[in-house]
Length: 115
Image (cartoon, rainbow, N blue to C red; front, side, top):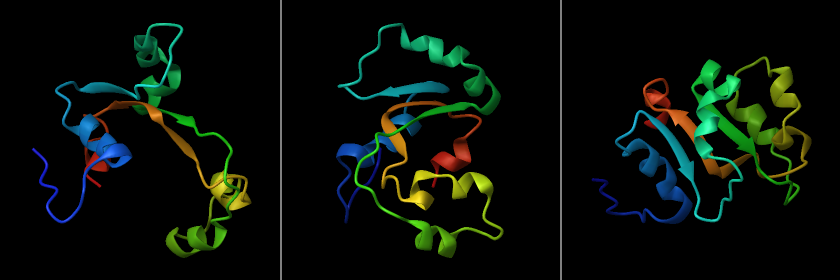
């Protein structure tokens, strides 16, 4: 279903394709090492998920790395307050989003999944 000639589709790079190629409209992507103490379906009832159609979690704070210069180059001006408070901007961590659990409504975010 995915032609990976010239590049290798494996590991974390395969996650967006697993979500996109799922037969379900609403998807909970769960890494094998993620542990739930309640049924994961309750995430579909989360107010933020219902409002936005997506639910993400923060990654751990590791590898302090400031990406302020890179963000200044790629983001349109003016830079938002939210960006200036992000871990990338402040240098707290080179990681922002945990990819072990992702909840997404593919219908609402189809174009973003194509990137």
